[in-house]
Image 1 (cartoon, rainbow, N blue to C red):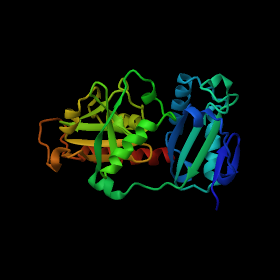
Image 2 (cartoon, rainbow, N blue to C red; image 1 turned 60 degrees about the vertical axis):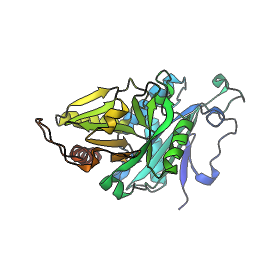
Image 3 (spheres, rainbow, N blue to C red; image 1 turned 45 degrees about the vertical axis):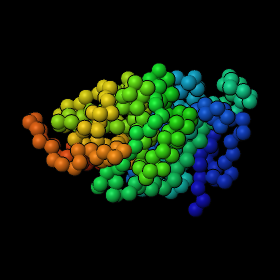
Image 4 (cartoon, helix red, strand yellow; image 1 turned 60 degrees about the horizontal axis):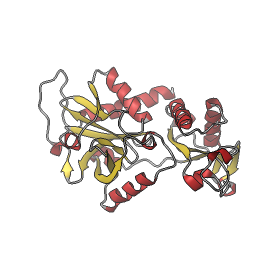
Length: 300
């Protein structure tokens, strides 16, 4: 069966979908996207939270979305159904300022371009969840004063360049620091680490994308009584962690066990006095399980 996409109010065959060469998303990266994961029965996990973030980001870049959240939700479900993805799927929503004059003036754009692509989801290798992912520290720095890191925008070149750096050495992710040297995020993920039974993550005051999966993990951790520390953290603190993991909507919760040449805790058990004892990887495993349970519960 050929793939179908949703483009500007209709479902069309992928090979028939056409976007103007004067679209400002193509010319200037003036647009936004959301990547989502669909599970059984066309259930897109936390779909409304993804759309809420989309509309908030659109306000920042002055992109007027001419669709309601309900209309976009319906369009996503129609796209999944058109591709017979009732069991699982990858969903990518892209919206740009649309076609306009060939100059960086979005006021010349008449109507936004909305594209929804859905395809079968290819899981990450199981060994990454068993043994953990490897990351490097990118030499590209996030600017705390810029609004761009906090938006899921089409300005994605820094992320692509950093991913080239990680792939060149066989790692799965690159970690950005900000210009002050604090840990920010991965190219496609938010970062968490564990120290002495407490959960740490860069706060949304840092130049990071406020991830949907990140929010779910914080919600679950709070419910089971894990102490959460959001703030600015030095790379040395991350490297000295007892555990670390990455999150995004596709990978869910993935252990992070190596950064550059350093192993997170070298795989040795951690001993400390705390009301709840965690061994290396145990909190990560717990949150991985809780996340899957949350998905299953919301599917019902």
